[in-house]
Amino acid sequence: MFSTQKDQLFSLIKSLTKAEKRSFKLYANRFQSGTDSKFIQLFDVIDRLAEYDEQEVLKRLPEVKKRHLPNLKRHLYKQVLTSLRLIYIQKNIDIQIREQLDFARILYGKGMYMQSLRMLDRIKKIAVDHHQ
Image (spheres, rainbow, N blue to C red):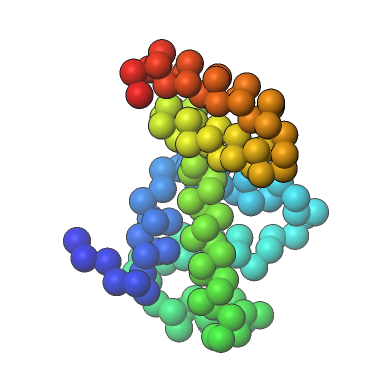
């Protein structure tokens, strides 16, 4: 099915399992103090829609202005993907290896060469063990 740019977030949210939605909510609320942020409210509104309708979204979220909606949707999309990455990192060795490579690059960039090399050695061992 062809998905337009406009409803990619809707499609992503609708594709989530109940457990993934719960995990996202836990991830998104990790630093919140009792109040839902706008992107969590947007998630809830989109999740309840049968079809994506931007006017309906704006009607259900009166505090969100139309000009702010694209940025809010982009932020929500990224947050949903990040929470999914955290779920699937335990299930997919490729994701684990890429994350560790990123950490090694960061350490190297900060001048922590030995820590970076040790991490690269661990990554190499994991890759060899899993035939990657």
